[in-house]
Length: 138
Image 1 (spheres, rainbow, N blue to C red):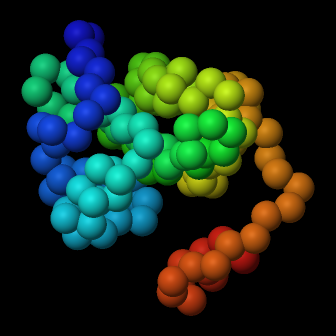
Image 2 (cartoon, rainbow, N blue to C red; image 1 turned 45 degrees about the vertical axis):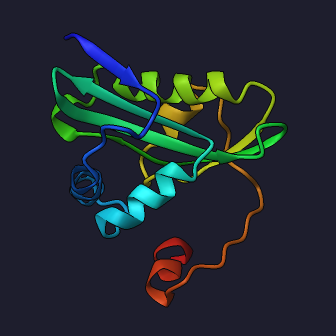
C-alpha cells in the first residue's frame, strides 16, 4: 500500500469529504461548509492511496497550548491498516505542546487510548440543534 500524505487543502474534493463523513456515520454538511472548516483549521491531513482519498482529519488550535481534533475518518474498507494512526500522529506532530481534546464515535475509545488520550471526567457542550445534543446525552 503506497500512501500519500497531504497537509494542505489545495486538491481536495469536498464532495468526497462530505460523503466519507456520512459513510462512517459522522456529522456531515454540504461540501462548501467542509471546505471552509478545513481551510480555517490549524492542521489538516489527507491520506491518499494512488489518487483515492482514504482518510483525513483536522485540528483547530491556537498553536501554543490548546487544540481540538475533529473529523478523523478512515474509510471502512481500509480500516485496521494503520491509516488512522498516521492521521493522528501527523496532527500530534504539528501540535507538540498543546493540550488536545477530540470528538470520536462511540467504540473508538481503545484506538485513542492507544495514542495516549484519556477520557475526561467533565465536559459540556452547546450544539446548534437539539438532535445533535440528544445524540451525546443519552
